[in-house]
Length: 403
Image (cartoon, rainbow, N blue to C red; front, side, top):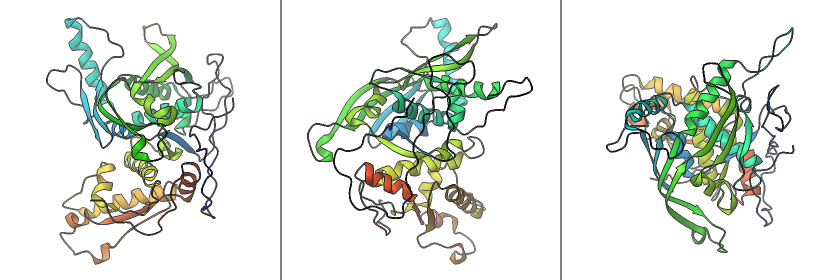
C-alpha cells in the first residue's frame, strides 16, 4: 500500500530561494504494520527508517491537550463527577474531561465507581499518552481517504512507531513484541479513548477565497465530543478482559477541523522525539515537541532565531530551578539541549549573552531564568516549510523577543 503525503502542497509555485545546502526531507513511510496472525486486510509490514520526519497535527488545541498528559493536570471541579483539565491556548480555550465514551447515563450506585476509575486513569497519564495522540494524528492523515473514514490499525504499529525493537523469533519461539509492551500501549490507547473535549472557542482557517490569513480566519464556539473515536478490538480472554490486537480510529469533531480539508494544520516532528523513553527522557520529549510546534509557527515569517527565555524552556520541559544549587538545573538544561543536538532534533543552541564563567559566585539562579537562548532548527525542516508551505526565508539573525 503506497504511503500518502499528509500535507497538501500549495498549487502555487514554491519560492525559488532555497537553502542550497539543506539535506532533502526523508520520505515518509507507511506505518500500519500488522504482526503475524493479525486480522486480514491490513497492509503488509514495512521496514521503518532509522530517522524520518512525520507530519502530525499542529493546532494549539493539540498542543494544549498533549500538555495535559500528566497526573497533575486533571482535577475534580464542583458540579462535575469526572476529572477535568483546562486548555487555555491563544487559539483554543476549553477543557478536556476524562470520561467513558458515549452518552450513557449510569445509575447512581455505579457512578462513584466509574468516576474513581477515571480518576485513576488520570494518575497513569504520561508522555506515552502524548505519543499516542501524535501517532493517531499521523496515522489517520496518512491513510484516510475521506473525512468520515474509519481506519484500522494493528496495535504493533504503535511500539514500532516509537522505535521499539520486536523480539526475533526462532527455535520454535514466536517473535514480536512482548505482551507487556502491547498491554502498555493498549492501556494508553484506552486512556486516550476517554478524553472528551469541551471547547468554548477554536480558531482555524477556511479556504473562502480570501488571500490574507486574517480574511480566512474563522472562530467556532461550542465544539464538543471525544478527541478521537476509538474502538479497541481483539480476542476475549477467559477472565473477560480483551486481548487488544487492533483499533478502529476516527478523529472527533474538534480534531476534524484541523486534520482534513482547507483548515488542516500540520507540523513536522522528528520521529526520534517519539522514540525517547517516556520515563527517563520526559524533558527531551516535552521540549522536542514544543520546538517542533514553534518552528511551524515561526516558518511564516522565518523568525527561527528568535530567542527563548530560560524560564520558558524549563517550563516546557517541566523542570524547576533548584534555588540552592542552580548549577544542577543549568547542567540539566544544557544536557537536554545537547541531546537534542546530538540526535539531530535541533541544529544548534547557544546563550545569546550569558556565560557561567561570567556569572557571580552566588545568587545567579533567578537572574539566569531571564537569560535568552537561541535554538536553530535542522536545515531540512526550514527547507521543507519554505518549499511546501510557502514559509519565509530564515532571518539569519536573532529577532526581538516577544514579551
